[in-house]
Amino acid sequence: MKNKLLLGTLLIGIASLFTSCKDDRDANPTLQSPTSFTVNTPASADQYIQLSADNTVHLTWSQPNYGYTTQATYNIQAGIVQNDGSIKWSERDIKDDDGNVIGHAPDFMSTNYYTCNAELSAEEIAQEINMADGVTKEEQYVDKGFRKIALRVRAAIFEALTTLVPGSAIFSEPVFFNHMASFKTVKAPGSIFLIGNINNWPAPEKGNAEALEEWKLFETEIGNKIYEGTFDVPAGDIQFRFYTKLEGWGDDKDPAGSIGPQKADKGIPCDWDKTKADEWTYSDKKLTAGKGSWKFAGFPGGSITFTVDLNKNEVKFVAIPN
Image 1 (tube, one colour):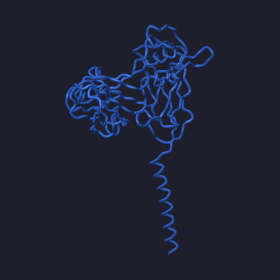
Image 2 (cartoon, helix red, strand yellow):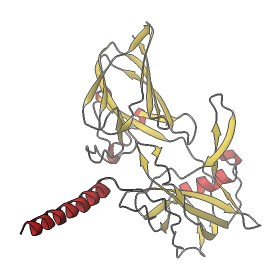
Image 3 (cartoon, one colour):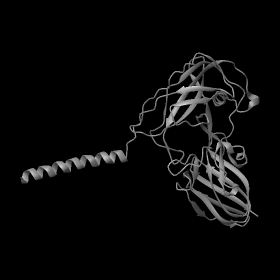
Image 4 (cartoon, helix red, strand yellow):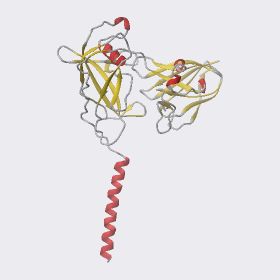
């Protein structure tokens, strides 16, 4: 009987060990770096497609195998197929702090996708084609008619807004549209929205897009993810955060484009650096996806320049108080 009890206890212990290991794996999944994923050849690949501001191009692809269920972010890059079969992809300049070009990086369409099925903006495709042609101003545009155009998808996993998870980024093989024509359009600087009691907390919804135009921060250079805007702010306690898109308020689980100093929906008391009497400053590196907000008591009124850097996840506010 004693041996049977000992054996039962041993088996239970072994079972518990395996269950514990399984629970650990479930709670801490290991990222597998995928080696490939496929973009499906669209039915319109051989059709003559004149891009415009009003049409779309349908594209679907498979999800890379990351080893566990996760939400990837998908971005689309366009390129022009050359006579020798090579592809000239759209790229942007990488600059150092002095403004010198030190390299190039892939440039993607402005819209992020989170599923494997998308209606691509034809205008965004045209902007990427034009960028690949070196067109950065509308007056530089020359109509080159129908050409063979390549599209490819980059899949990646991000945390803390724009921090790329190592080993998660992968490009698909390109798909080709044999007869596609661009039109005169160039990429504009990206923007985010300032929302708070400064402007009476307007709902971040598409129906308020026109009202929120005057509360946009714009990229200091196209594609650099550094946003800046200067606004007149009334006197009183001020509280605010930023939104990268107009898809509702969001919540703690899905902030829906809301970015602030913490995830939880709460105002974080902040203090100005008043070393200079005529120019107050504040900066931090707390920027994250969430509904937290910055809160300053007793602002005397004046202008504030807001700078939001999504590369370094940091903010800087410079106030000229009345």
